[in-house]
Image (cartoon, rainbow, N blue to C red; front, top):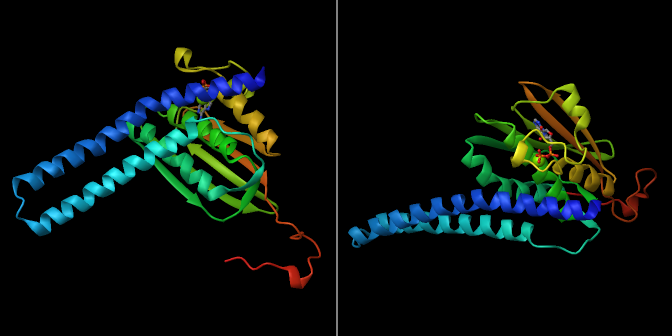
Length: 245
Ligand code: ADP
Ligand code: MG
């Protein structure tokens, strides 16, 4: 039953994101159209037109990237357990959530202070991150900042998603993750955090949430760092020690 709920929850997120996605793709289309009109008005102005077409290509590339990331997130993936590079998944999740942030006038700040991996399913990590980021954005009705950062401490990587939104009361905080608990009426499913808890536990991670009403919320995820074979923590023989860039 819970597995079905997680699939259903993903579909809800996917269809919700579709609206802001199309908006984000329409913007570059408008820009590119304007540039083509300018080029058309004065086809002989080679240097200006070269600049204009360069920017136009960049805009199209960016829109394509947004669509590709979104479609990749939306499609079903077979379950896997692999080495998941945190930095890549955080950046991809940020890309997917970006149109929603732009629409709400929210600043996204990403800072990743390591290059570690964890063991698990990259698509599930994305679903976790997107759900938490989306909650953060939804908690900020009048703009704000969503900070996403990641660091290493001991044998764990920590991922923090911090918003400057409405925050939660003690009672709300206690109910977080309870199926169908939502303060968003028909705009919420109340399945997002349940999904996040399920998937995080599945990757041996933990979740810690700190929140103050009127101030904001920090969701702190932690996962055991992935280790390659033979890369033990204790007495690793010198000849097997790997040097990382
Ligand atoms: P939904 O987002 O569909 O309501 P979730 O399980 O994702 O369901 O979240 C449950 C509830 O927890 C939300 O309705 C909201 O009241 C509260 N919540 C979750 N994240 C935050 C946050 N970052 N800031 C404030 N409230 C939050
Ligand atoms: Mg949610």
